[in-house]
Every structure is written in C-alpha cells, then in structure tokens.
Length: 268
Image (cartoon, rainbow, N blue to C red; front, side, top):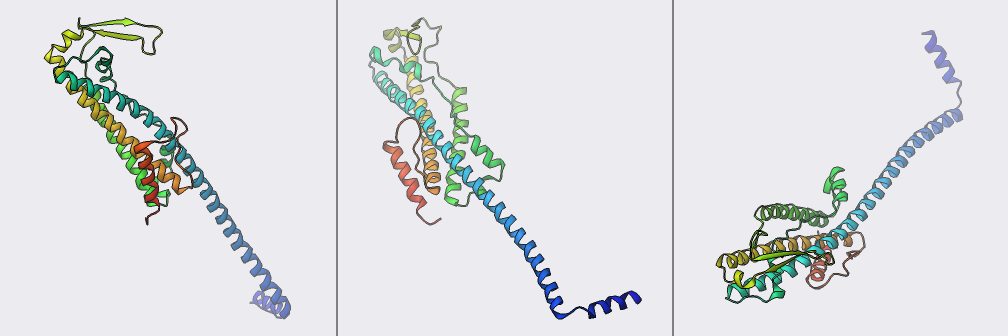
C-alpha cells in the first residue's frame, strides 16, 4: 500500500506537458517499430521479386536453348524421314532405288533422345513450382511442354526397344569399309539387286520408314511445344524468342511463335 501511495504521489507531480512528451515518445517508439517491420517486409518482397525476375529470365533463356537443340535434331530427322519415305515408296512399287538413295537403310536406325537443358526448370520446381508464376497462360505452356516431353521420351524408349535392322552387318549382301576422312567413317555398300529382289527386305524398309516418320513427328511435336513455351515466356517478360544457334525461326516455327504471342494478348 505504501508503494502504491508513493507511485500515485509521483504521478500527481507530473505536469501536463510532461505527460504529453511521454505520450509522444511512446508513439514515436511504436511508429518506429512498425516502420521497421514495414521496411523489412518491403525489402523482403523486393528481394523475392528480384529473385523471381531473375528466375524468369533464366527460364526463358533455357527455353531458347530448348528450341535451338530440339529444332536441330528435328530438322535432321525430318530430312532423313523424307528420304526414307521416298526409298520405301520406290521399292514397294517394284523399283530398285538408285545408289545415292541407299543411305536410308542406315538412317532408319537413328533414334536420338530428346536431350534438352532442364536445370532451371528443375530448380523452379524445387522452390515452389509453377505456382510462383502469376500468369496462368505461361504456367500452362510450361506444363504442357514438359508433359509432352515426358510422354514422347516414353515413346522413344519403346521405339529403341524395337530398333530396326533392315540389313544386319552379318548379311553377305552388305559390305562395310572404313573411310577415315569421312564424317561418318563406316561406309556401307549394298548388293542392291539382291536386296531389291528380297520381299523380306522390302517389307522391313517400308515398316521402318513408316515408324521413323512417326518418330520424327514426336520430335517435331515437342519442338512446337518448346517454341510455344519460349514465345509465352518471352512475351511475359518483354523479350522475343530468338534461339542463339541455328538461325532465326522459319516457316511453321514462325507461325507457332506468332500464335503463342497472340494468345498472351488474350484475357487469361
């Protein structure tokens, strides 16, 4: 009781202006604390935004690499497939293709993988996933590309498990020689007349040419989705999809890119 009485007496001796100063000092401390919290949150949000912008830039640049890599393989496969289809068309019609067409016998066995850079995408998925990307259109194109990529990789594994071999190296109708000066040193020379007269060889080449065409189409489909993703990502950050190697996009690839950009200007 004595203590409370002394405290009460002390408060009665405080003047009004002193109370005012005390209130102002208390408010100043509270405002300072709140301001510190706000500044800390602002700095944290700014750092997170900068990190997100950096991630989007890196993801876009990785998508450009995807397009360049996939397009290069796709173009080779489509050119090979065109020659193989021409070969199969001739031999199935009873014609023996000329000597310069017989490279098709070897190219039907070429089944390259869909090997593309994915380190930034993997990093993104490990740090919050696609939900960190605010635009649903961009999220959708990234998800569709990776879904198509995974599905096509499974199909490629199937084709590799049934890799064709129209003329095995043990077949006496093929002779191999080594040319150290050639890009592909293993050179095959075929007994064309004997092979053209063999129904089993004809059937194998027709089937192989058809399957390789489907295989090339898988690569083409993944390439088109890569271009779509690259176009959407670029448009979302104010950049244009221009692969660093392989030259500018052409033909159907340009049309795919324009469609991706146009979709970004429609409501999400």
